[in-house]
Length: 169
Image (tube, rainbow, N blue to C red):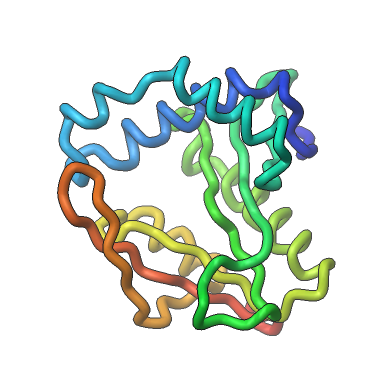
């Protein structure tokens, strides 16, 4: 197993991982109609553009020459947090690799990258109804700080913010 920074050639794998993760994680949170409209080709074009412009830092997890997951990270985007906070913007694994320890390895890699850059805390956002993801983040030492924002994915959904400080375990 290896974790490395994503390359433009990873765009198709990123799009498949993102699409399959969404369709599994957000089942019964987002309507089937919305999930069925997720277009892998459009996602691939999106990731190609992101990687070309280097607008986001994306690292991929590779197992037996197969990209099985990715994490996106960088400085935090929240106006109420200062520059001491980095952010994990997203983590996705192919669903067949869930609950096997790969997500924890990938998250810890991202956490360490952010702490190595001098961040004293890390934030992330998760759909309020995504109880599996929330339990996963809590297991890794993140706590919900009570900040909520609304997003629209066909309907209004709440995202909740989680925080972890450098001394948290």
